[in-house]
Length: 340
Image (cartoon, rainbow, N blue to C red; front, side, top):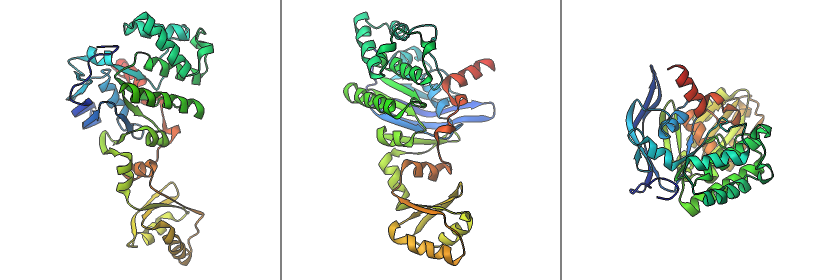
């Protein structure tokens, strides 16, 4: 069976059917049914508190569902939890390294937990530590590492045993652009060469757009959109015009009556329009604003992005600073244990 447990035979690495998690009267995950293909990079996007981390915590067997079923790599998450754990890798949003051990000792311990052959473990330690550019710190104690260095080591550890399914909870927060690029290049190569299935939560829309085969947008515990990135962007239709103005509500009312405006939404002092032939519409829109005596600070035009898709479906934007430790897997589990 290799380094991990058996791979699913039906082509899907993950399947959920009506998966639900309640905390008292709060429904954190609400009747989620999805299929993630073997070898797919799948993005889970949503505002804080949307339920994405609770969903992942059930899939990695750290939390039991209230109802519904799921399998990961062919193993039932409730009946075959050990099989699930043997076949997955996890990179937590919160730190989970032993700070009193060296980088090498942390990796060596991880290899032992997964019963890796010693020679293979040494080869993989050398490979992953090079990938995260920590060769010169391999035998240094982790408590001397910066936050970025610890994150890089955690990612190396998550990849060490070549998992069949890799869960990444906000894996590149706090990393510099160069390190992010190196990490994603390596992960992409692992997917292509070894067929690893990767499930990520991320606040970086460019990251999701570049890497993910499909994305699901989750809000209030429900999946409200799921498709390939290109299909989600195409579903918006037309171009996106963003107009900064102190009178966005007045402009929305005026522009919303135009037949070539598909949608008009206000958010954070900005009016966002979906229009056909956007370049040709700007002069007409500015003329309407001028006639109504409404000042416009700036106008930008672009093709739909995942940011626009996210705003369309949730009414919110997603930013790096929205990431919260309270949303991480480990913080959620700690809270659950304290509450009994």
